[in-house]
Length: 381
Image (cartoon, rainbow, N blue to C red; front, side, top):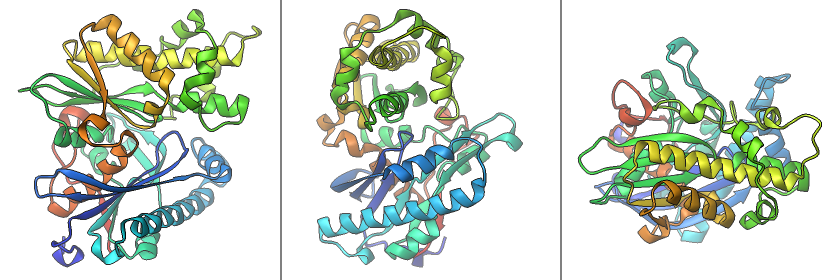
């Protein structure tokens, strides 16, 4: 790539993430040193409007006039990202020309990995060209497609970032609790493993939005007020994804409200808070089961992502893990000087850094790709 696109004297990168929960945008400013270590500088969050969230929800499945709707959503998201960047730069006291690049994830609207290459695709909505024009900063986006093209799942990508930032002489795991949960397994002298675990916040947020018109369950208080219904939990835990071998990834293509409705008994009156409690237990149980399957000697579970703010979910994850791994310790990424809310956005700043350095950013041991690949597409400023 032409070196003139990047100011090699700059160590400033911006990462922007909007996840499966469809709740908004996280935008992070970081410096990244020559060894790939990231140092957080500033963070901005912007919530989606109800209208934007509704449009992106519509795009999760077949609908009328999808091409037109997606194009307008991609433009709207670029504008939202640009506003977040503007706020971030003002907060940090920096100008756009001081930033090397933006790593922009976009909003996943379909994720369909497949062993049959002609059927495999992943689609993150974002007009990256418009974002580059609005910010006058180099934009790198579409990180997942190259891994898919190389026969991988295209997700999760963050284990490569976790491996670069969190190291230990003991076997540890990093759990990212976004809309979908994903685990990174780091063992000394062993390949890095990672995979999606299934729903973390996605169904919790959708269920409370349906019944209480709230974007999320603050501290898990509503779920805590309910009780787990064993038959419903057992039905949900029969989903084959939880037992599929790795590599594996998932999203709203599988775990959506229609999937949840299929697990509920017909004609039986159930308190909605009991379903919320059962959904928390689904997340906690499936995470603990899969962590135990792949890293039974895990010494520490390090958590990050928006789900860390759900106190009840965190309690249940810890309890379920301790049933299977009684000596395991727990911490969140604050222990490693990284705000749990910003870790995933920070990862996309790091992916942008990898692109500018010409470094592969996928892990074949995680995604199943046939080889390491440089990820992303450049939209110069």
